Length: 327
Image (cartoon, rainbow, N blue to C red; front, side, top):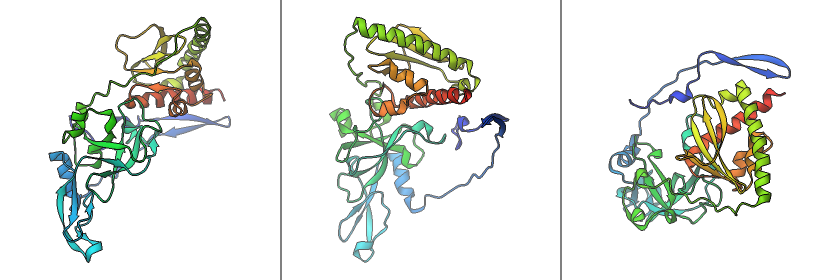
């Protein structure tokens, strides 16, 4: 089945929902306005076709001064009285020219990409920088992993459509020498599952007792969330088995049938893992007394997969929904 311009998850259900503001109920109805259109890539077509069909990055070089621009946005060089340029293939390695800002929250059309850095990479041999998304293989992208001057490798999506999101970059230090040197490296050729978990200190009687106490509070909070229809809607049709590891012990957080379940022990094949020295960080986030995203950014919570930030987003929505239902 072909993919659609608007993904199914971005299309709201027919009907609406009720919002309570200052003690009064208001009905909000879902509706739609269609504005589909087509656009030509024009003189940039060669660049995007090369991404899609050849796994190549093209630039243009002035035939007079030799300046190399990427992408090839100038058919004639403005520095040389509009001398013609020639198309050349570029290297797929380079350095970040500035520390990229990280996007954690985006609208539904970009939700599958978060969190991502949006930076500019100066490819080897280029004089201008290419704007590109940045990711990491070390769990969720957080500040400090990619900075100005970080050596980067451009990676190609396995399925490409002729768009700038056909490529992204990761730190070269996270890849093998063979991967860095390979032309047209595909996303599927990178092991996204090998992120090393932070090491936790050994369990003591004191932190085990603290863990047991907080786990009871978490179980009670999960029951509250499950009793809140608005909170359950935030995880509707979402299925995840999450392994939670803390200094005091481990347990499983399961999302299934629009509910949260706390289970003891370790999962055989969890969808992803959360590691935090203090269970209180997760408890505060789900209780709307703190932010799970802020905890991730501060490295108080470690998540094994960048792609699972959507689950964190949904858990934060649940916490906010429960808090609002109590007003």
